[in-house]
Image 1 (cartoon, rainbow, N blue to C red):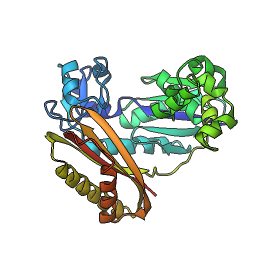
Image 2: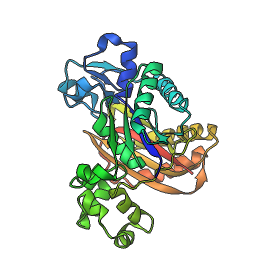
Image 3: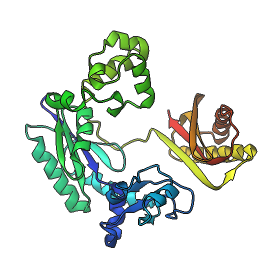
Image 4: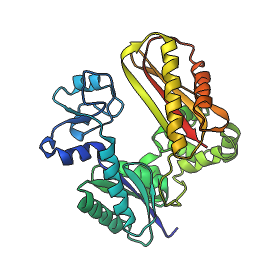
Length: 339
């Protein structure tokens, strides 16, 4: 292939945006989450590198973060500020004239032709820093997975390349779960087949894999193990695949009638948002976080696509019935996947 894929990943994006507004906090551990009060329930949205050194990462309860890093500065989430900064970053990448595929607020794939992707990567880093005052890391690869995996080796603010020449040197002996696209559930299913390393996955029989994972997914997993992922960049605005709402309660919900009311209200509000976008949902998920901090998730495909609040609320209620445990609840969430 003549082309290259670059994976541009902003460094500690949310924390970095906050530090632009509060430069006096540079060098200090900064934690962003909830309304910024670590005495309340909530989880970390992101943490600066200084806070991460103390074991504070995304998803950690704010109270735990405060115990691990008492000297941390806690800030509230400001979604509007992050969306504005993200828009600047993506506009800068597109200004290069190259195809750009946005993956979210803080990362994107960029297609590059020619034989000097290193220079292209450095140019993009410079342009992003000049325009936004934010640093990014760039991974280089022949395919999306190579570029995506390369970024982790370049953090922070570096450039790293992965190709077929060093793929197995870097990942061959590592567990399959390190690969982008393989979660813990698939990794466990692979382990049941005595496939535990990337090299073993790369050498698996595609037909055998198709038998266990399906005609499309099985061979795709083998290609993933070989570092052969789709390399085509899909430019244009990113269309979200789902929309969700969730709420952490400062006091536990012990009455499941109240849990049901919260789920129904959240589902209706979610459909109001989706109807305003002129889209429809095809699947509903309900998330319950029990006391003290165990999370369960159930979902169900809808009989037909809808953006009707009552129909979706009824579907969410049906999913909630799949939770047999009626223990006290600290968080409720509802997610709709788009048709």
